[in-house]
Image 1: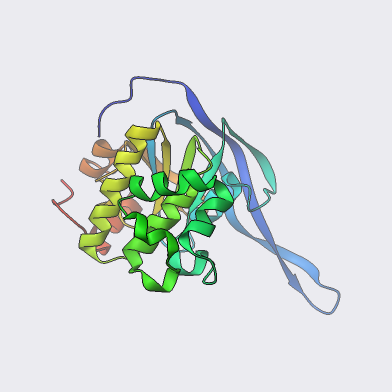
Image 2 (image 1 turned 180 degrees about the horizontal axis):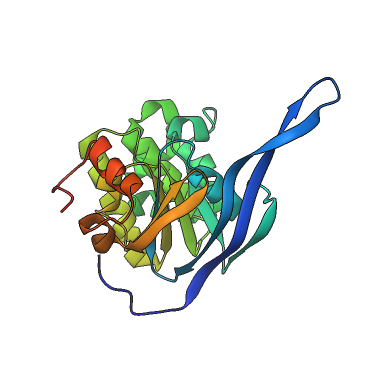
Amino acid sequence: MEELTSAESILEVRDLRVWFPIKKGIFSRTIGHVKAVDDVSFDMWRGETLGVVGESGSGKTTLARVIAGLQRATHGTVRPKGRVAMVFQDPLGSLNPRMTVRATLTEAADGAAAERLVDMVGLDASALDKYPHEFSGGQRQRICIARAIACRPSLLICDEAVSALDLSIRAQILDLLADLRQRLSLSLLFITHDLGVVQHIADRILVMYHGRVVEEGPCGQVLRAPREEYTRRLMDSVPRIGKPLT
């Protein structure tokens, strides 16, 4: 990815903790905590695509939900500069099956904008009067992306947004996100377990393990010479698309 020319912050995260209590007994006594996110701090820059990578349970989705305002933090601060929107892993589950695409998009934008939105994500205007079950998984994710950008966010969070898609469709959605980033001056926070996907879209990477950031840096640098054994295991353990991670 191209080097960023602006150092303007779009997101500040400081000393963030999300701890869930472990309770026991009839009086629900707290005996410990699950530290889903534990003392995480970072900045994200305007126009940047930041990849947050880790296995299931590493804390990356909890981090995304706090940034999006869907989960309360136990401690720390999250300061986004502008609107935040989110695209989830399961497009079918995040769309109302009883609503047409037009109705879904009109909830977030006016009716005239709905046609422009479907065009921006590569769908024909005829899609507007169809229901979610009439589309493929990749098409449904395009609809979810259209809904997310309808509110004109500054920061778009993609939580495993391509992990449920076939490899060829996955590449198309990655290309779409990269295009929208340029056209709409978006910043992307891209959550994934797959470093092979991140190499195609991210400027910088945060690697999370047990709720903590264990490695961070420019995408190419981390992929060429990872410092942490955990990062090296991630590189070796998942399927990849495109060129090898070298």
